[in-house]
Image (cartoon, rainbow, N blue to C red):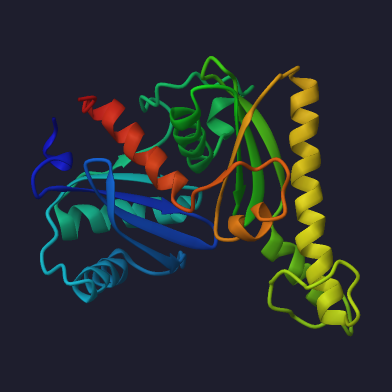
Length: 268
């Protein structure tokens, strides 16, 4: 066992996305604390370091025993910032998920370097719990579907504009349509503009995801596939989906935990 997953020592998993950064503290396989903050690439390592400490102290953690840190980032300017804050404020050298990191999953993408670290973490966590053919749907800045074979091989996936991007584009590119709160409308046929937009986005994305899953099943000639969803809006879409079996808001963090164990040799 490494000190990062035993006793009072903690693993800090950090997932830097285009819109939000999610931070989790693990003791063993247990997610003890978690936070979601806005990703702001212009902030310095010192600013983020103080923000992290304030989050910890507000949660009653005066001096968290951070032994290991693992980082996935799809925002290149943020990678160095987070690495610096971890070294300066937590005296930990982060494991940055990327080429050369032991994930335990073969990557069959034409160019493996093109696959986002968060997508790999999702695939690892999804396959870990299913043990078979798996599709992970991530409702982030982009909506992604990633397919893992029954043998645990990452094949590739689908990338589409995310729900938030679609709503922003609708508001910005039209003269009269308003910004709306994204909630499920009472009926599909909206009787006012707000409900009509909500219906289009919610049910439109439900049908898109279910349709894409069916296409993957057909094209890959699958008899069965486990579909798990993650991301801030996963629960909203999954409630109406006929293909999504499970929602896990912290799937990416769990994948980072697993990768950290495999890479640092903490496999029990």
